[in-house]
Amino acid sequence: MEQLPASRGSKIMRHDAIRRNHIVRKLYSLLQPLVFAANSTISRLKRLIVGKTVDALLVNSKQGLFLIGPEDLGVGGSLIKDGAYGEDEIQRISSLTNERSNVLFVGSHIGTLAIPTSRKVKHVTAIEANPNTFRLLTWNILLNNCQNIHAIQVAASDQKGQLEFIMSKANSGGSKRMPHIKAYKYFYDKPDTVKVNADRLDLVIPEDYDLIVMDIEGSEYFALKGMERLLANATHLIIEFIPHHLKNVSAITVKEFVALIEPHFRTLNIPSKKLVLQRPQFLPALDEMYSLNESDDGVIFSKG
Image (tube, rainbow, N blue to C red; front, side, top):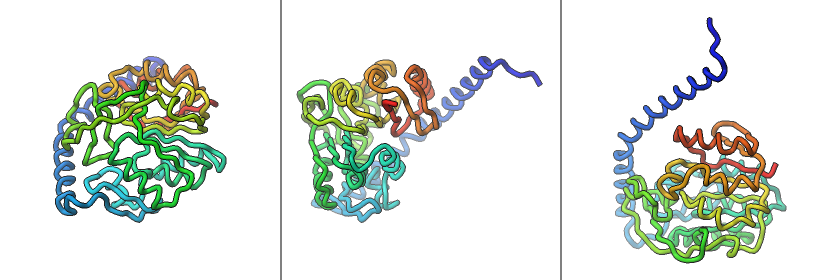
C-alpha cells in the first residue's frame, strides 16, 4: 500500500476535518432556531410558574448553596439537574493553585466557580458586569460565608465609560456587551438591554494574581487590552476561546486576540485537544480551531 507523504497526508486529513465540520455546521444551523425557540419557551414558562415576584430559586448543590435566576436554563439548569456545575473547570483551577494563591475571575457569573475556589486559595476577586447576576453573586457569597471574596460590579474593557449590555434570560451566562453582529443566537430570548459601567482592570484592581480566569462572552479582547499589568504578573490565564464571539461580538481576528496574550506567556494548553504548545504555535493552533469552528471553554496560557 502506497504511503502518502506526511505533508500531503496532513492536508488530506485537514480537508476531511473541514468537510465534516461543514456538514455538522449545516445540520446545527438548521436545528439551532428550533432549539433556541424551545429554550425560550421553557424559560418563559418557568417564569410564569414561579411568578413575577420570585427573584431567585435556592439550590443546595455539591459546591454549596446557590441562588439562581428562575428563568436560567444554563448554569441554573445544570445546578438543578446535576447538583453541580463546572466540576472539570474547578478541578483544572485547583491544579494550578494552592492555599497561597490569589485568583481573579473576570466574568464570575453567580459564583459557581469562584465560591468553591475560594475555599482552597488565599483570596478571590470576582468581576461581574450583569447587574442581575451580580446581585445573585453577592447573595451567594453571603450564603456560603465566603470571607475571602471581593466582588466588583464592572465590565472589563479597554477604557473607562459605559457600554450597552444585553442580559440574556434563558442562559444568563450568555449575557454580553452589545455584539458587533447581532446574531439570532444572542437575541432569541428577547434579552433586556442596559448600560453598564466599564473600566480597565489595571486601574480598578491594584493587586496582582497568580491565576486569571476569564469568561466574558466575546469581551475578552477589550478586557485584555485593559489589563496588561495583570497579565504580565499572572502565572496562568484560563480564557474561553469561541470563534463566533471573536467574529460577531468583538469583530477581531485570531491574530489580534493572540497578540495581546503572546508576550506574557510561554505555553498554551488546549484541554479539548489534549495539546500543550509553545509560543510559536499559539497562533497556528488557534487559527486552525477558528477555521474549523472549534471552541474550548478554557484554554490555559502559562508562563512556563
